[in-house]
Length: 374
Image (cartoon, rainbow, N blue to C red; front, side, top):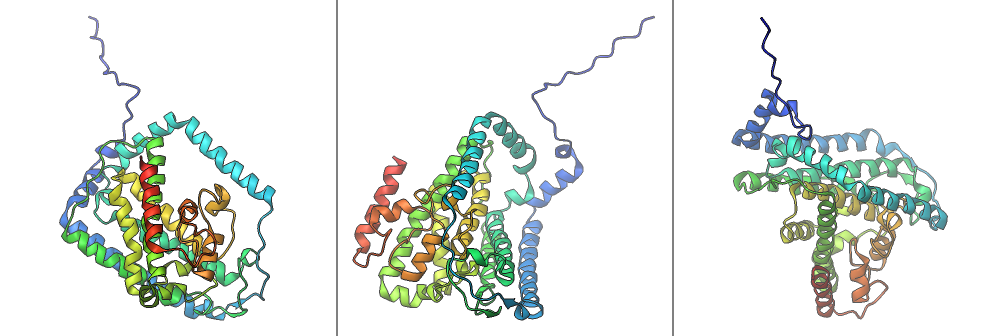
C-alpha cells in the first residue's frame, strides 16, 4: 500500500516570521510594559540611575579631573579648509541620495523593525520613553565632551581661547549643573505615571515620511524656540532674572547647553513639547527626534568647530552650527535661532542688530512657519 502524501503547508515568502514574537519571554515583556508595577519600576529605576550618574560625576571630578592639567593656551581656530568641508559635505549628500535611491528596501526594514520588534516593546509603549531617551542622550553627549575638554584632544579646533590651569568647574560648568537631568526627568516620570496618555502609532513609517516628519519637527521646534529666545533677550527683566545665567560665560562648553536658572530650564523644554504636539508624528520619529535634537543642542554649545556639525554637513544656509551660536553668546543681539538660520535672516538678526523690535520679529517668524506649512 502506498503511503499518503505528506502535505506541507506553504508559507508566503513575503511574510517574515519573528520567532521571538511568539516566545514566552516576549509575551512576558509585553505584560510587564502594560502592568502598573512595571511603570512604577521604570520610574524608580530611572531615579536610581540618575542618582548613580550623579555619584559617578562626583567621583570623576574628585579622583581624576581636578588633577588634570589643561594644555597651554591655544590660538582660536580659524576654520577648516574649503576642500575638506566640500569632501565631507559630498559624502553626507551622497549618503542621503543612497537612502532615497534604496528607500523601498529601507521601507521594508522599517516595517519589519516596527511591526515585529518595536511596536509592542514595553519601553516604546511606556509613557516616559521619550523623555528618558532625551535625558540619557544628553548624558552620553555631555560625558564625551567632559572627557574631551579635560584631555584637550580637540583644543586646536576651539573657537575661542581658554585659560590654562587645572581642570575644575571654572572651565566646565557641567559640575555645577549636572543635577538638571534629575529636575527634568523625575517630575515627568511621576506625572506620566499618574496620567498615562501615550498612543503608539500602529502603522509602520516610510523613509520619506520619517525624514519629512523629523525635519518638520525640528523646524517647528526652532520657530517656538526663536520666539521664546528673542523674548527672553528683548525684555530686560526676563533676561536679568531668567536668562542671564545661561550667558554668564562667553567661552562655551557642552555643559552650557543646560546651564540655566530653574525658570529658564523649564521654559527651554516648552518649544520641544509644542513641536511634538503641533505635528502628531510617528512614535519612532519622535524617539529619533529626541536623539537628534540633543546632539544638535550639545554641538551648538560645545565650543569646537568640528566637521560633524550641521553647518558643515549640510550648509550654514540650511542649519546653523557652533560658530553661529558662539557669536550669539558673545554679542547677545543676533543669531537667536537654534538650528534654522532662515528665521534670523527673515528677521534681520543674522548680524548684530540692536534696533530690531520684538513684536514685528515674532510676526515674521510665525508668518514664515505658516508659509512653509502652506
